[in-house]
Length: 376
Image (cartoon, rainbow, N blue to C red; front, side, top):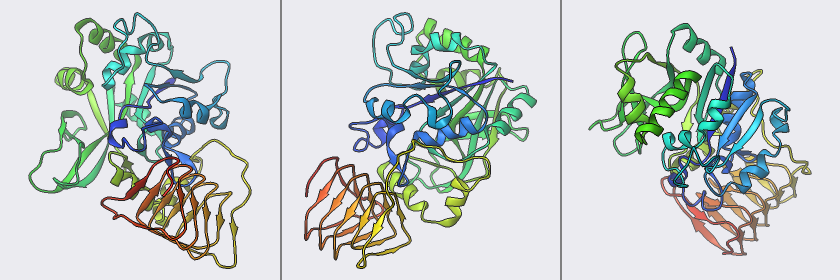
């Protein structure tokens, strides 16, 4: 059994346009020291997948800087390893030279990569999913059922106002996928949501991408899944652990806040044999002065804390001045907080500066965002 991984790095950039204005969704910082792609890439590497293609769109300079040669994920290899797949990979795959807008168009653009693979199976995954899963179990389930494609689903409680663009999946008692559609229930309730993590037989993937090129199909769900569900063996596999997807700024905020829960941290980072890998940076330890007070927070290396930090996620190199109070906030790398500053439900991007005496507040349903290099 051999498996190749394909990761979509830009497919949902529009969900958090503020954070993806200068970067891909894959390279959005998360959890004080990670990037979103770290979770998907670690899931693959921990499951023995050592050949991974990352489909890019635009703004992928920071993604390339983060991934480098792939050595931090043990993917710096002569054969296989990690490959960046730009949108104009070949003229044949993209004769009109257009930037893809859908998942299927992205696959059409990398047809030469797919046909060049020799692995038996392909794992497709978005990069905006936060989970720590054993893909080996998913792949073995796919093989044992003789499926053409298997989708990982997660049972979640959805409400009409909070579902966003969630896609729900229906299956029969044997686990066969029978319907997939956007959530539209008039009342709240539990539903199996699509995680966009698929295991597909490589030959089947080649065939439907070739068909999509020939007939100009563009939608993965409409033109592949719905069309083939009655005649092909599509299966579902339920994930029982922690799962979250970044489909809005509020979701990004709440997922970071979830990490302050010890149970969630153990579910993501405390699984034996399945570490979440990321680019290693040699930063000095955080410094806490006598006036510092930190409770229920994640503080990364290289920080200098002189004020109070409560219920917050603080990235590398952040400086918090004296008599400042930071609550329920996310401070990205190298943010500078002056003295006598009060922040609540605020997200600062990299290198933001909050000058002395400022008071800023958002809400968990609408956090206040401060862009990269902005000074207030």
